[in-house]
Image (cartoon, rainbow, N blue to C red; front, side, top):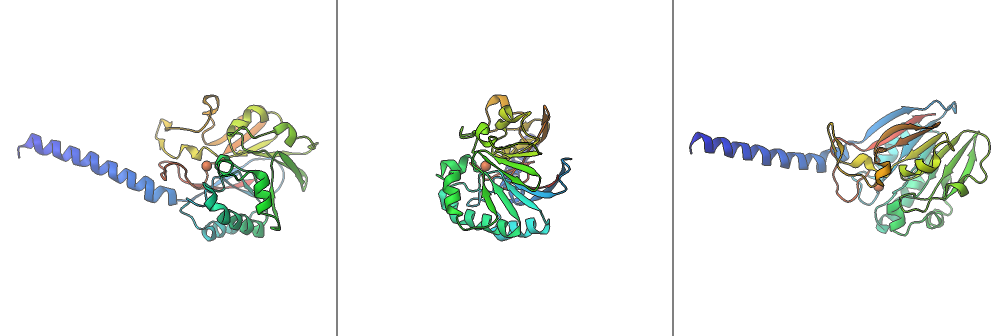
Length: 263
Ligand SMILES: [Fe+2]
């Protein structure tokens, strides 16, 4: 084999090997690299809250025991789950189990996401399935006053089931935290609440360095809200990368996360 042909073969092998390595890493390693993200938002509430999202329990690499162990070790005062609890209805039993276990740790507030809705798990259905489980509150376009502040939850904005006007109907003075699955709620929520917690984007799952996510399930107007902390008017919004995956079981430069909020 001449030198030129050998170098060409070596180059091809490096590209194929690198590609296979990248695919293996994105499939087998990064989706299992659960990170804890610490976020401080000065609301003067004096609480530590866990924000989880997109658990996709039926397709997640994490057992419920593993998630509860990590969340429990962070000793939260409250847990917020911003939807996509499951991917398909076969995950219903595990979803009930996860929420029950979270409720045993502390008060847990949950809203549904687009995959829940697509699986038939509306907020009313979830309430029915959680009947008798203590400390877990499903917020479907409604609000609860908790220890000096309001926790408001809307049904999934991505499937156009949100009704923020109705959710805010009984809300009066006091700090306001809004739970919504998709960050596109910010178009309606800015200036009306102090903090919005969301998921849905999974951070894009695959983020190319210096470029960003390859694709986001958001209307074009909202694709800037891919991941992280944003401020719009007086309202802050945190968009989590979530825990599980959907469509393709891969993550790259976008590890799963549990968020510990100091509020
Ligand atoms: Fe999701």
